[in-house]
Image (cartoon, rainbow, N blue to C red):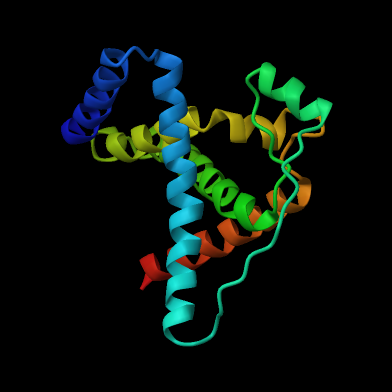
Length: 173
């Protein structure tokens, strides 16, 4: 816990020292999480597939023109989640898993009462949920065009349920 909090404090210090704000630090934490979950996962899978000869490099041109709705969301400081499910599903699955971990941990602390053993796990799940609140907001609260599509949320929930089921089976044996 000390190392985790020290790392966060050092990063916050560096951001503030270079003229950034608390909002800048929070956005850097969010981008780090998004990059960790999506880019590194797919980059690693792509490299492995190239090494075993299952994939050739290819590039697809995409339209970078922003419409009025995207500009409006940007000016409001909201994330636009109108992207491929390939990128959304891992992020949303991590959020769903952390929601389940946080709620399960709180229930376990209330029922069993071993909060000293679960504090760090509950804290980290809570931290991930707070830092990535725009994804939670995009999944549950937003109704605009930039929200997380329900297909991505359902697919993520399915993967999360499978992951939790397999984890519970492993814990039983």
